Length: 76
Image (tube, helix red, strand yellow):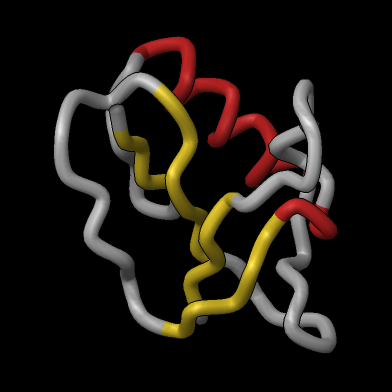
C-alpha cells in the first residue's frame, strides 16, 4: 500500500478526510517526538487514500497515545 502525507489546506482539518493527504508512495521520514499526524498508509483511490473506519480509528488511537502504528506515522 502507498503512503500519504497529511497536508491539510486549513485548520482544523479532519485526519479522516482523504482530501487532506498527498500521495508520496513510500514511507516518509517523520523524525522527532510523536505529537501530530505525519502520514498514513492506505489503499489508493485516484491518488487519494481510502480511509476506512478501521484506519480512522487507528489514526485516532495513534494520536491519543502519541505512538506510531502500522499504518500511521506521527511527527513533532
